[in-house]
Image 1 (cartoon, rainbow over the protein chains, first blue to last red):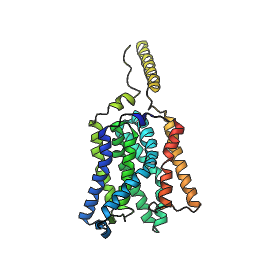
Image 2 (image 1 turned 60 degrees about the horizontal axis):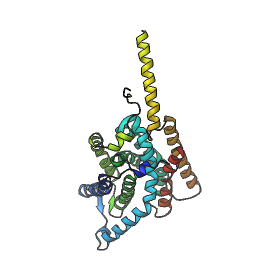
Image 3 (image 1 turned 120 degrees about the horizontal axis):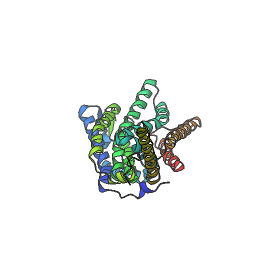
Image 4 (image 1 turned 90 degrees about the vertical axis):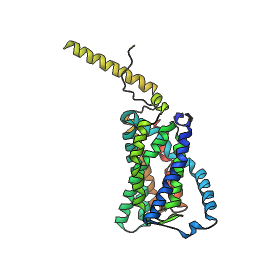
Length: 222
Length: 87
C-alpha cells in the first residue's frame, strides 16, 4: 500500500472545500427544489428539536462512516485517478474515473431499485440517473484530491456528500425534503462540471508536478 | 536517410531511457495492464458480492437503516482492498 496519498501535506483549501462544498451545493440545490416546486419541506424538518438532532446525526454518521468513505476514495482517487492523469491529463482522467465509478455502483443500484420499486422503467431511470450523478460528482471529488494529493479530505467530502444527500433528499424522501427531484438534483451536479474543468486548469498543484507529471516528457540534455 | 534513421534511433533511446527513469521515479506511474486489471477486478468482485448477497436473501435497499447501509458501506472497502493488492 502506498502511503504518500496519506502523508502529503493537507492544504487548508482542500479541507475547506471538503466541508463547504456539500453544505453549500446540496442545500443550494434543495433550496432550488423548494422554489421550483420539485420538492416540499417535510413538516418535521421545522420542529424545534430537529436542527440539533440533525447536527448530532450528521457528526455521528460522519465519524462512523469515515473509514468506508476512505475505502472508496483510496481506490478511486489515490490509486486510479493519478494513474490515469499521468496518461490523459486531469479532465479526461476524471471523466474516465467517473465512468468506472458510476459503473461500479451499477449492481448495487439495480438491486436496490428492484427492491424498492416495481416498475422496470422506474428502475432504469433511477439507475441511469444515479450513474450520471456519480460521473458528475467525480469532478468535485477529483478537484478535492488534486488540491493536496492527500486522500483524507476527499474521504471526508465523500462521507459528507453521502450523508447530506441521504438527509436532505434520500430516495425522493429524505429527512428534510420529499418530492420527485432526482433528475433535477443530477442536473445540478452536471452544471458544475465546467466549473471544475476550469479550476483544473488554473489551480496550483505543486505536489502534482513533482509527483505525477507525465513520464513521457523529453529528457533534459546531459 | 542514415541521419534520419540515426536520429530516430537516438530519439527512441532517449524516450526509452526517460520512460524507464520516470517509471522508477514516479510512484504514481502504474502500468496499463495494472490499471485495466484493477478496474476489471474491482467491478467483478463488487458485482459478484452483491449478486451473491441478494441470492442469499440479504436486503440491500440503499436507504434501509441497517442491511442496506451496512452492506453498501462494506462494498465501499473493495476498491481500496484491491488497490492494495495491485500496489
